Length: 323
Image 1 (cartoon, rainbow, N blue to C red):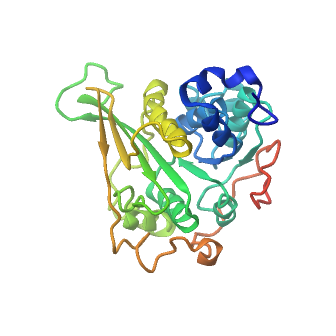
Image 2 (cartoon, rainbow, N blue to C red):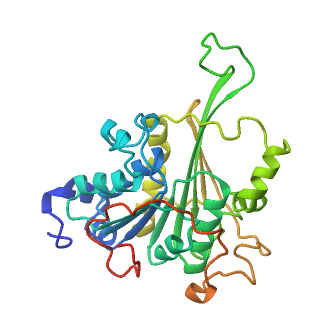
């Protein structure tokens, strides 16, 4: 039984046997935006294409570098040599899995007003971003337009309790953890879940202030050092995020607001969260549910990102000029 014009009967057979034909139809009706398509985000794109979503938008300002090749799914050495936009690589990956999938790829930051506004018609937003300001922007978008927003984070660190025999490795015990925060319409927002710090987000939105603080020694040494990232560790956390996308259209497990994953011990902790009545992001007087009437947040001057990535088939109905 077909689920849409692009679906071959056998393609989703094993998935339908698990979750049912109605779940597959609902997935096919979804437009999903993935913001940040590096290590975790590229895995999200791959997983969504395999799940069979209907339309996809990908946003990322960066290009592929050689140091990305250990974890960015679909990226090749040639992409790194050519400094190919990550958004373009993600779109290519999605279409390789599902050649008929409409994908809009934008090389831009979510802190760009046009890019932010272009995602307002996505049903689901998945954020795989670094920093507090991008999370603030995505949280506002989800609250204002009543969208499902899933925030992903993976952190690898070492506790300073032992010396390492390998000079290339920081001393201490390896700690690997991740989180999946789920912001549902009407539920607690990412700020209610302590998912970002407004003061740090404001600082990130003001490059001049950040430079001044760094020069004055207020930012810790190493704050701009590249963070470790490993494919299989990202995969473990992304799996929970993909599960929440399916859980949204066809509930198959109890909903969770916040999932913490310890990949060393290992352990998974599911946390509940409540809306904070006076939350400045989603409480009374906020932009919750205002849609276009809420306006566009105050972003810094437009961030140049070079020419847009090749988009392929457009996302009908997104209202975006970058289809």
